Amino acid sequence: MTAKRGYRLAQVQVRTIGEDEAGMRLDRWFREHFPDLGFGQLQKLLRTGQVRVDGGRVKTSTRLDSGQTVRIPPGIGADAPKRPIKPPMPGDSGKEAAFLRSILLFEDRDVFVFNKPSGLSVQGGSGTTRHLDGMLDALRDKSGQKPRLVHRLDKDTSGVLVVARTRKAASELAKSFRARSTRKIYWALVKGVPKPRQGRISTYLVRGEGEDSERMLVVGKGGEEASHALTHYSVNEQAGQKLAWVTLKPVTGRTHQLRAHMAHIGHPIVGDPKYFEIENWELPGGIQNRLHLHARRIVVPHPREGVLDVSAPLPPHMQQSWNLLGFGNEAADDDFDEDEK
Image 1 (cartoon, rainbow, N blue to C red):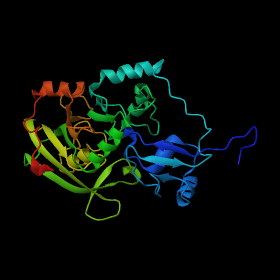
Image 2: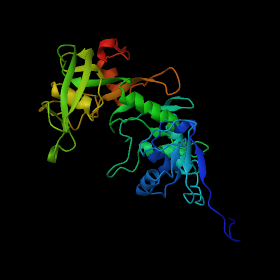
Image 3: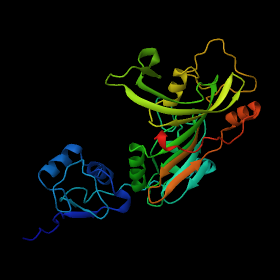
């Protein structure tokens, strides 16, 4: 059979999965390459065997491996124009790229590691227009690929933030975070001196309601919404009985975990607008009323090989407090103990 003049027969496409796409779910891969194809349409194509991976039937949740082939039936995206690559950083984007470079702690072909300033949101939200995720557009690579967030820090928490440069790196880092093979160290200035000087805080946390909707509350075990949270702490130095420099090592990664945990044991973090509720407490002179919580160090399996181990210097407001209180910049317990996993 020959096609009529002026027409051409649609062709089956075969796409090969690239190295940086390994680990992606099939539905996400289609959303990336064929944004006009609806999820329901994709499910129908899979049920009827029109979409296959390496010749076999698969599901939307199937994880792809590098080198696999995906059969695309005729008429799916064959004539659709490719999405334009976002041009790199003219105007304001140039300023954003320069800013991101100024806070860069480490980079290679797989990751960026930034020292996020206090006050900068990681992602957008209600009323938030300036955030790190938006700035990452300025660091797209030559193929137009935007760096990807793999974990978060609160807006007012400063410190180490790892960002993946490729899909493959994002997938591998996400696995490490889910498996809790990532180790983190935070430094904080707290009210009072915790006793004992070393300990663990194990609770369940749940998001509050009503006036407490922006806080995490400690609750007893149980409840569908409650999540277990575990933190190890150690006192490094103290200023009398009024303030202490504490190292915090979260085992789990719950929202506001460290802030809620320190408040729960009666030693809230200085400058915390949500959890510092000590009445008639006066801030020592020269110390700014800003959150004194810093993501000091992260140790995570590198997405390609070896280990990524990066530390971040204190932000200016915390360094000022450390200077005023006579604290050093090295902690005796910055190493990880095996029993803290």
